[in-house]
Length: 70
Image (cartoon, rainbow, N blue to C red; front, top):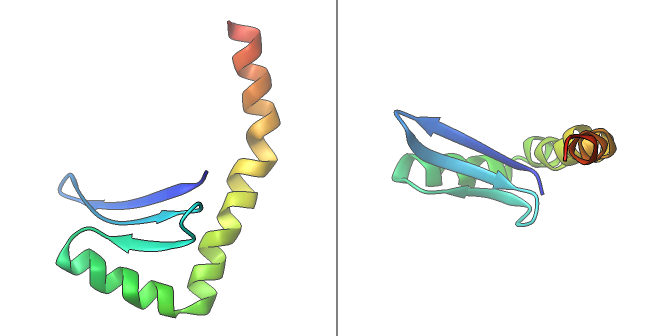
C-alpha cells in the first residue's frame, strides 16, 4: 500500500492511500484540497502511479534486505 500524507504543524491535513484510490481530508482545509485534487484527473492519476514507482520497483530489494538482517 502506498500512502502519501500532507502535514502542517504536526497535524495531518490530507492523505492519499492507494487502497482507497483517492485523497481524503482530515481538516476543513484538507477536505477542500482533497476535493480539488480528486477532481483533477492528471493529479489523481499521478498519485496512483506513485505506487508503481515506489512500491513495486523496490519491494524485492526491501524484502531481501529484511531477510538477510534477521
